[in-house]
Length: 423
Image (spheres, rainbow, N blue to C red):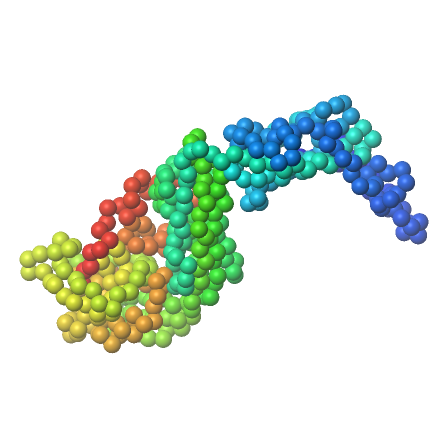
């Protein structure tokens, strides 16, 4: 953080005011080499004028102690101090009123190299400089690791970014520090934010779906940062994601039809059947989690028995929830497609249409369900229901933007069995 003295600003202003003289005069008073200007020429070496608590060049210091810069005599005054580590993170600090002392106000990172640049001025207004490099000791403490998801690759425009932490982070100050170190950059740039799902998981999404053919880079600058006593940030493997064309589907449970769109244009309308009474399909936006050309679906795995029991081999299944909701081929219910809802919650269609759907979607493609009498898709815990939160509510889950709601301290799946299929 930069801090300049008011006296320094006044001198610079007074000196540069002389440039208002007519141009015909030649060099202005602010030009390098002007006679009589205390601000002209190269800065003097302020090494003998300034003391730094880090010691000599290349010293190794304890990151738990603050960095201090002080003057060693009556002549010199500190005008500005910047301290930045190899990750480009600036160290916050405060300069005393009289300009004789600067002290860091945030924790130093561990196991990194810092460069400190100090600007001074003497009694005549001449500017001095001192630059010092030092290393901080690695912390002998727990490391806060972060694993980003999904893996690098190409996804649909509804794919959120995830960050799994190795330790719980609960305090508002700690969450702000962690969240601020998790970087998401996209080209083209879009507005987006992190949301704390629970104390160990964050999701990132833009205000609206990602634009088609976007490049998304995800990285961490947590390494060496002190999160709390005994816990320091660790390095993390970055990921690079891309989105394909804008592919999305809209399923109307009462209209018994699915409209499939590409880049804003409906390219196919598919007759469907969804959940019957007692097994109604969830309303809301879901995101394709994966695709399986063949999956065995058994009613017992989802607690369905009696006359509703089933044990079926299902083809061309695109998963929507961890609890077992799919879009898949359902030739056994061909008479219901576009006519009535007869499934146990999945979206059934002909084998040909299911194969076409399977071939034209990928992980991250959003599928929105409307006009069902079923429950709403949960935002978290059963797949990616992130888009069912308004942007205002989403931002409330950001420690940096507003609030720090916690949806639970355990597994973000909230106990959901991630392997259960249903038809």
